[in-house]
Length: 119
Length: 325
Image 1 (tube, chains in turn cyan, blue):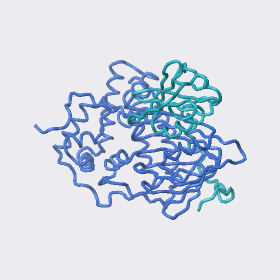
Image 2 (tube, each protein chain N blue to C red):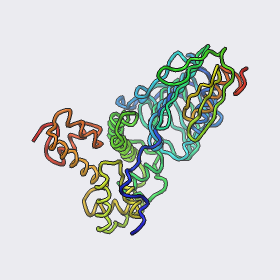
Image 3 (cartoon, each protein chain N blue to C red):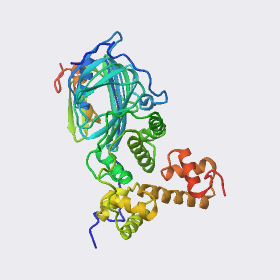
Image 4 (cartoon, each protein chain N blue to C red):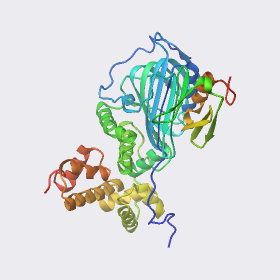
């Protein structure tokens, strides 16, 4: 049984300092968000950020929607993409990689209530 | 006329499913859902440490080669599986332990490690920053068939062997120039293809494995080799691969590669690179380009690393492409 005991995980320090850190190489998302996901591929480009009081959908200049305005939301998976629709005085959508569907659903449900029905 | 599967006048589409994503948050349940789904994980247990919990996961690349990074402030343990891909990983911060096949290995910071394919592994990580390179099985195995005569199927890596310092230095040097091209949305398809291939070659050079246990493959007949060369030459400006020529001619890639070695004293890809260098030289001569403009021509022909372009050009033609003859 594995544990998270720090002593057992004591670092061994004979690696190569030239080994690159890929973290610095890749794109970023807003740091103030409690949850954020973006994705781009040949077929779509999308972004979703959740803050304490609002959700932002879309890239560039995202659509900002206060939680109090959200009437319903749902997510539809088609192939390798998941489209999130938020109903708030109209339907607003963004499309993201379906690999992150599970985390998206957990995050959205935590902030907006169960899928389709505003809590 | 044999059916070669594709009209030779049709442009070759090698725009693979490219994706780039960042996902981040501060909630333990979201993190568990993300990582269990992304890594076919089971029984993930996440606890906080003396720092506020936070995770950030990034991925960029295509459906053949992708680079990923993971910053995780917290402790996590569980089990996961990489079902059909070769994954190299290393830590740049924090601590981690893997257990695969009953053998436990502590991850040494900044020392890349190759995961066993298709084998469920247990792990424990704590307050870590992790880099990963994912290479899908068919892509790596095709490169291995071409350069090593790999007969097909999964490559038998020796996971107990520790790569030497020279091999790791070469891996690091390759990643430093190839990874930025793989994640660059504006890179040309030829440059991305070359960068992906360089990563695959570096993986094969770095991690010990069984090379062509059955001996050298039977070479393709010389006439078929010339036919394959003609196919590659006709598409030299496209992201054509030796495996495309092998498929169109109905030849095993390893046999075609052995035929190229005997006929041209080069692998099919080395032959293709030479053909692209000749195109670059023709463009430089016709347009009278030099300096940075000459390097741009090299990039258009897939030579994404300017030092690599200058070296390859010098080796082929005995001249520096940046200077007019």
